[in-house]
Image (tube, rainbow, N blue to C red; front, side, top):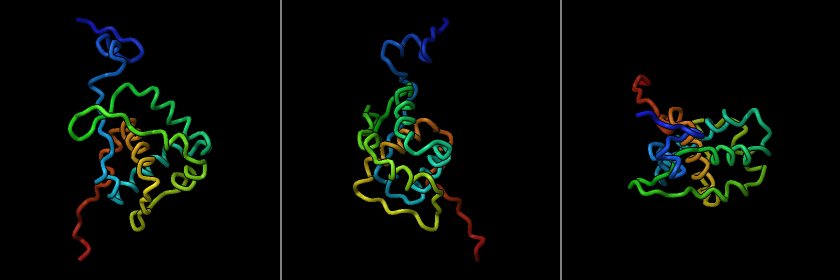
Amino acid sequence: MTKFICSGLCKECLIQGFCRAEERKIVTNTELENGFFRVDACNSIHDAVVSMPYRHCPDYYATKYRDFKGWFSDDYGNEIYPVLDPLWNAPDEWWRDNFYHKHYDENPFCLRIENRERLRGLFSLHRALNPKKAMLWGIRPVNDNEK
């Protein structure tokens, strides 16, 4: 049986409007509280957006979200929609201050309450777009050669 593909979706998925095989997990509270996870995610976003003006970042991610063929789920497999409204309404300075310089492990930035949902939406979307790169966010090698 040949598969009919239109706009990147097979015939079965075209009826639904998204691909059931492209399930992506939303960022959890545990991941957000992990300083290394935040540092790695911000550095990955930095690599993606550093070449464009920071005023274009919301449009860039809005376009990527529009073109994303998959869906988001929680830890239990329930379909959920990431809260991205705070991301679209973020001031230009927020993009500049958080993603236009590298973050380092020695000094992970503080997670403020007003940034929690904004970062959750952005990290979830960026992880969905770059799953291979995002597999190692927050993971550090164990090395005891420091003795």
